[in-house]
Image (cartoon, rainbow, N blue to C red; front, side, top):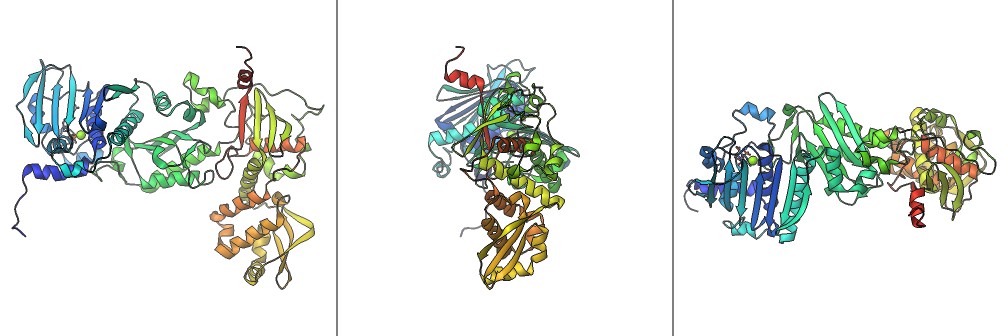
Length: 589
Ligand code: ADP
Ligand code: MG
């Protein structure tokens, strides 16, 4: 080993650069943050070879004073904070004063800039930490920064770069994030001289639509929640519009894109009931809170943050999303959501539109008024009467009225302006699940005695467990008794499940007992079991339903929360409008 000696200035910067500048996209992120901090309204980005050969960012921000130019390229020199206290309330995106200096140590950086009262612009170039003279240059007010040959000075790092296409994809993603949180700024992006993105100045909703497309917006739900000094706003996908990776989760805190475990957890929890655990919702969420409640100085790239009150932020996100997701039943999510964007209004506004009540008859029976016809399978009981209170008064029957059953799988229904197709098993499963949850919560589980008990064999462990837990099982609506050395008899079952596969349901219950013991049955964690019950309790394919039963199913779907998707996140119904059908037949064209 050699003796200890101080490292030279450029080497220090090159080592530091490793933390901030990982690839072209991270350099681009820093440049864009600087332009935003400088109050730019129009930002143009030109890339060559995915940013490896050249990253150019042109803005119309406030510019840099010519005498400050050398400082802009000096480590730990910034115009954004002065004191330690400022760190508590930093509202700018940058503040560490190291991005430009880092880039200048691993690439060639050229700055051309002009302040508003300067007679002309100035230009400076810095290569491997060596700065050129500052010379006058032509420039409108604003700043152009060009990074040439990233990592040319540090070939080892350059080897880590991927193909130009991959690097470009990362840059594109960075621009997208900035554009999402700053609709008030115009962004243009070119690659190899080709114009690829152009997002003009607009509002949040339309910027999100421009970036994610109509398909996302028609299925998105708007979130709007406050708690104390913090607020949560944005759009989230319905569970039926999910993605197989978590890349499409855009979370911004005070305008800063972050990846945060706490928020991801709250998100997962909110969707847990309505989405399969391997699917991810698409979300764009903006959290605003006082600057001193979040520490952004945790990580050099500033994509991680620390909250002073993590629990409060978790609650804000979880509650905001849960509330919104609870609204995913047909009565609340109007069957007309597909049209709401035309006027730039939020989906919530659309739900308030008034729509004439449906008017038609089928076989002489008036299904509009006669709910008492609902028979065995989809019984109206105390619970659904409680649930009736959440009926949307404006549009009482958004799912219309049943006309037929298709292949024993789908219910077809005529709606006010088209055809509704319902996956009857999926829909019934969801309804049962929600009813079971409510029944257990309110402790109003109604039992149905079985005329003929169902008997089945079990192993001794299960037999003992059932014996030990008689009263608990009774509490949840099951009457299971020992009928022989290895035989159990099921004598009563919750009414809600009475039409299901009884033996299977009893086995689900015993399974729960053997796997998790009795504790989970009565606490908050029973949802998994209820979901299994619902699956085995729900109407099976090929069971012929009467029109009345089908209508009762539709009405339940309208009244009960979260029925737009089954317990695994698949949709339970689809709406085909008359005009879509007209198009099939080229009517009115
Ligand atoms: P930081 O943003 O953390 O202050 P940087 O190294 O990114 O550090 O930038 C150093 C300084 O250069 C900034 O504080 C700012 O004053 C100035 N600067 C950089 N880019 C721009 C720009 N596009 N417009 C105006 N000023 C800029
Ligand atoms: Mg910066």
